[in-house]
Length: 432
Image 1: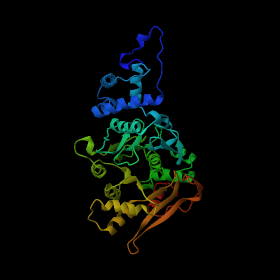
Image 2: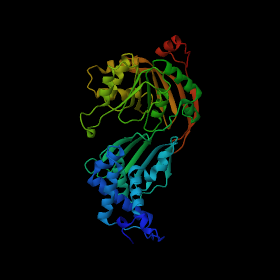
Image 3: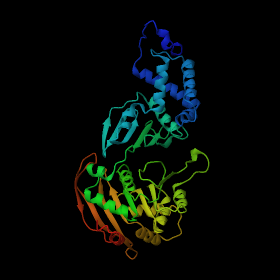
Image 4: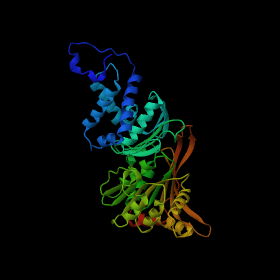
């Protein structure tokens, strides 16, 4: 077998053929080894090439040096091996076909040969196998590094964003992971789903769609809640896209996920510690927005003390839109209260609850890619220490299978009664 570093296509102009003696797994190992060595010796190089800061030829030179240094033998042209290394470094390899599938929202790998995808809220096993743990470990480090993250023994978990493909990626390796490398990819469609699309998919019905259109024309503050992967961001994105064209919106996120189509949106994200300079938090982004003559604040996901800034901004007459994790629509305020207390607020718990009740109008609760509850916030009773709600819509569940798929029917319970009733009336929007 010839050494790759000495083979070029023009050498075999006499028609001689190379003999392929190795199988695909061996080639995958070679590609993985080359990538591993480059990530170990020059971790910033791959990220710089990916971001266009360094010419591709610089990385190609490093690849050739590694091929020559290790004297890899393989029945393949060197140029073709280099291409396979580049494909491994800058594509998604075994996952690429699932990345490109717009119907898939999640790709999760718990081991190098254990993968599931989620399509329309339903999980399904897929046949993906990286060959061995070492290749998968290199793959995970590569995904993190080229998207601006850090992944090594000291920092064994990383969350990054690929804005080209609209991906939020969590990767973790040993020693954090006892079971070996794992990857979790949340995908957002390159072409956003609108409300009509969500009606067709069964997330909402026509009545909820019409209600959301009226909400968009009001100044209602809206929370979208549920557990992870319930469809909160998908529905919120569709709502943001139907806001009045001239409504000025600040969108703040830990990682880019909203990707609005609506004009007059300012998109900002946090600055993490590993990005250099002073870190910038979600709370600071929301707080700074108060000086920007905004109409609406949109937080991709409330996860910490930015909850208090969201409540304050909504209480000052701005529209607020956000997602938050909660067990039910009724539990949302409890979750928001706990997160707000993390900001070391001076106000009493009673005052915070009163501010929440006066500033937040509607709560959508989602489960398995379906809106199952819509509550209008009526107020807060300090004597009973209870929030009062008006249930507008419900998805009455008749059956739920082992994958979480829901069967049932949408039911309309009531018209709006609180503050929104007056706004709908004044703006000629009618009821819901």
